[in-house]
Image (cartoon, rainbow, N blue to C red; front, top):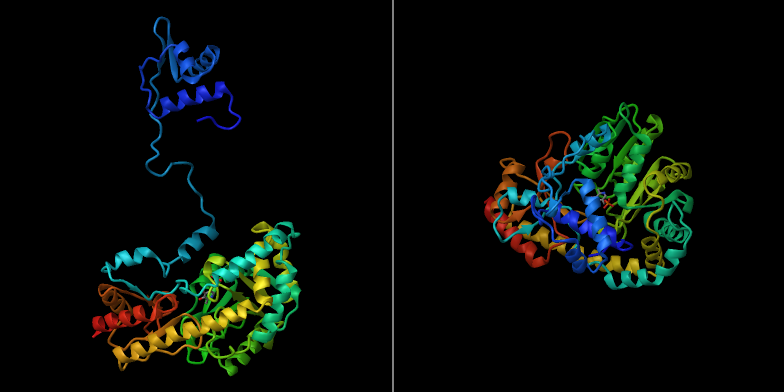
Length: 471
Ligand SMILES: Cc1ncc(COP(=O)(O)O)c(C=O)c1O
């Protein structure tokens, strides 16, 4: 097949060269005469002769006086079956630490295989998208409506103003946040904000405080910078405040719905953390990931609203819409968003404009609020199904009711270890996540059961099999 703009000479030369390289023409094989080749390719004889000359000069052909052109013996080509070898990859310190920080991912299919699960598989592991809730028709409509504007909008490194205005209104009303549009930066989900803040503020020799157990995405972003990690044990009031360090750069918190325990940070702890942040100079990062899926009419107000000069608020649409959208935002004082806007061109010039405009339309039309009402009620019913199945099938256990989010936290009775429960569950065809993967230091043994992607029937059946395996 000819490549666009390829001359006849180049086409014939390439075809012969590829024939030799791929072994179609073998060393010692005599080529047909130039007249016959010219007829075969529908080109002038001179073109063929020019190609033969070039391939002779490249060492692919030998020309013998009486027998014409013969394929030359070539040194073997490197095999392409295995990885192509090349110069050694000299990884940066950041890359080495980022790779080390990646434990087995919750949704990693390999851990299923390792567990040797039977065919009937109920997968309660965390990190999966809620099923059947994405408002596809409305989202498609919003995308179609804004396709033209998106292509012609001037790029804005913070994200389009119309989206930031709509989000400001939403966050003031729904989260009690205090902000103006210049304090908002649209991001590709919470992870992009965590990475951007980590690279802006952390390095080896600096300290970042984080909840233990806690969110592995935040830990990985912090660890990759080489900063020291300072864990705060979590209890039934949220992150503990007894052993805060005198100095730190950042403290990462999930105050509304602690990940993974589901606890809400108490008012006393909120006040203590804000007070400490003023004394230590640390910024508080509030990861508000589950706020939009709070089952009560209204989630507890944001920490950012209590101390906008000390708190950076991260939001995401991964839980309420879909993780694949990669859509979220960061709220911080304007001088912080200004710095992030100026460093952003190094990695990503602007957030994707079309998605941002569709989001603005979805927020201001009331479509998002309607979607949330439906999603919350559906998720609450899946949560309640899981909770009552656990109470029925595993009486005496104490699953923790959660106020928001997509998984349930199940502390284990003292005679069972996390790995034993995971192993026995896998043998019965049930996947679950263990809390140990989310810890920096040893603590309460517990497993996590995600429910948002499962039907009530699958939830009940999974719990029955889990309980049978653990009895
Ligand atoms: C604590 C926490 N933060 C953030 C997120 C979302 O991250 P992202 O917006 O990068 O998908 C999740 C998962 O949905 C989470 O559990």
